[in-house]
Length: 211
Image (cartoon, rainbow, N blue to C red; front, side, top):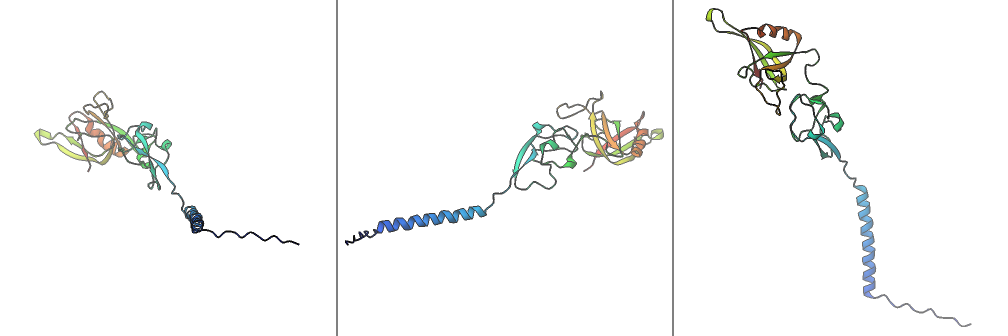
């Protein structure tokens, strides 16, 4: 029988060997890169609401006052849902760039638990230009007898201003400025009782902003 001889394969050229080695190196590099990427987890990113324009204390926060900030870890205590802020009243002044905590907003603005709201008459000179949301010390003056100097008494060491009004009881805000004539204070009932005698004819209420 006649046997066919296998045709001898021509030897691989140097270029082919280089191409083969390059291809294998490329595949190996892709595999290694895939393993590395598989082991690297993308950081989790949250959107946190932030104040974009100043909101005075006592004013309701609207969606127009808020923006969002991308963070990998929300600040401790920050409200992370816009719905938890919009429609709430600022309990303190809120400023651009700030996140908001539950203590800074509330469903209403005014006297807290165990407090009453008392409105006292003031003049611009005696009100220390009180601003809603700030804390003041309340003093009362009684006219002195027979030309003596008035007697000044500290009535409340720390009271929260919950509203500033004109003589016509119109609320004064940044958008509606006016001359202060009435100031609403959140105080305890006993403190309100101490203030009332100084609201009569000839008496004066003075408010001094606390540092």
